[in-house]
Length: 357
Image 1 (cartoon, rainbow, N blue to C red):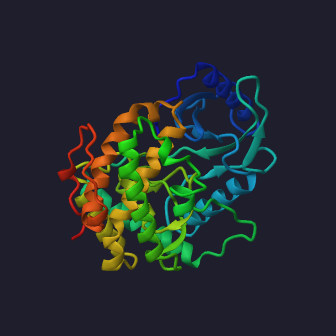
Image 2 (cartoon, rainbow, N blue to C red):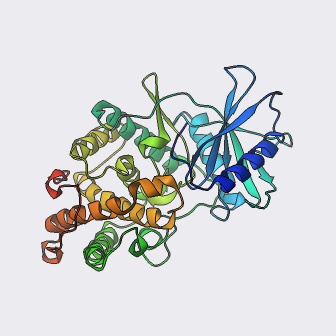
Image 3 (tube, one colour):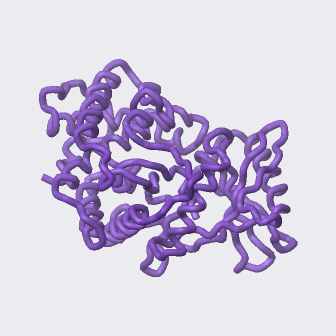
């Protein structure tokens, strides 16, 4: 399972710990189980260890106000269908004593009431960001998931977020405004504003046809993937929703979009995808737009989640490092809108060459 950095608030951690202990009583777990907080981002995840070394579970404590109970049930419906129909290896939700996999647990003075879900533990290790062959497997995995979506009949009550331009970088963003990113300056806003405008224009031209837009995982970054005996396991569907299928490609390089190996990794993803699904040359050329969409969305996420150590570890440097990526992107796809503004950063614009050209 994932192991992202923890938040800085000890009081919140303590409150979550107490809530997790109460939640464990809702499930038919053996006596002597312990709960250890292993990550907090949108949600808090606990590792539950049983009295024997082979007894382990993952308890996810949902963030307040992010997803409704119906949206969580929709997530579980899709990941269960993916596994049942052999489209992807996904976590197995465990029903509570009352038969419901979603339990609502009362909070205390430090945390409010939360929905929680218990999953069987999944072994494996995070893919390496330098593993080209691994990225081909990630492409295959995404293609199988997308093929499943196109043939799956969703329950009539199914509800998930939509991740389009408006809800990512536009007027109703789920993760906050990119303008509020850490360390944002007037000069940075100028470059970002031009980039956002171009992204919006290109996505409008790209369109939301059924062959390009549907239900996606929405956060296939390496921390949400596990390699186990040559197989890819896909975990943490908390951000699954409706978006462009190529968005799943862009999320695989989250937080290291500037790295020199990224073009090769994304070409490997595309090769793997084509083993299972269709990917036109036109679509492949637009991958860089989705990488920029994701990068700017993460700038917004970092700004709106400044209480987490993950956001603090990326912080101002991530915002500054996005400037040369914007400049490089604009110089290729919209030269007339490129700007000469340069921000101090450790990233080098030349590292992020055209992905497919």
